[in-house]
Length: 280
Image 1: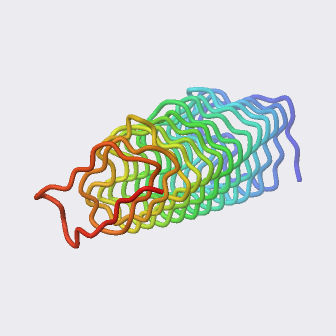
Image 2: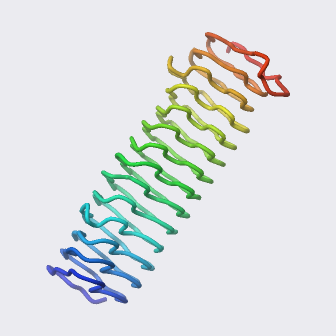
Image 3: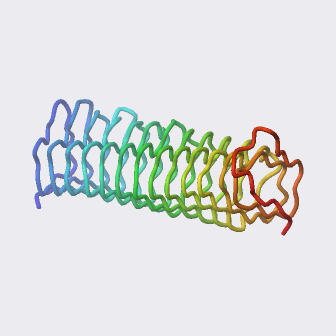
């Protein structure tokens, strides 16, 4: 493997079609597509300032690197990436990729990141700002997530999430085959139109959660006082270890809780309209 150390590159495609290359303390200045159509690339202690540095790259690792704001849309149409101990200040990262492994990564502008990606494994990931992270991605495993981005996990499939703290709006809309363990979910309109969403030992807050859901399961979760008008038109099996502020027109299944405030069952309820609501 060839090594390039303590160097700078800029302009258009300076390392185009490089293979079996290690970059150490390299700076990619303003320009485009610095490392395009490449394979078996290692980048350590590098700084990326130019647009689109890693496009169509197959098999690469990035460790202790920094992506400046100018390094936007840096990782597209690539595969088999391992990224560790890296900070990203640029938006629109990770697009149309597969086989991504990341650990100890912080993204300060998580706008439109992880779109249409397959097979993501992440540990200790922090997302700040931006909208629609993980849109239309699938086969995701995350242990340790902190996110205040809006509209997170829209249209995802096959997600397993552990130890997350999410503050957002409209999380997990149209999500399918998702299980969330031991997490804090603060979201308006959480999980609307989801299918096969399972929440285990989660703390849930935010208005009108978990409506229009099909095959929704809650196991030993708690709902905050602002969780009003919950479960509208959902098929649900819920065991809730707290008081529930209000429930509106659940479609079928059961809801068990330590107590209930308002229970709304009106003429707009949808069949089979046989959901059992009872005290634990």
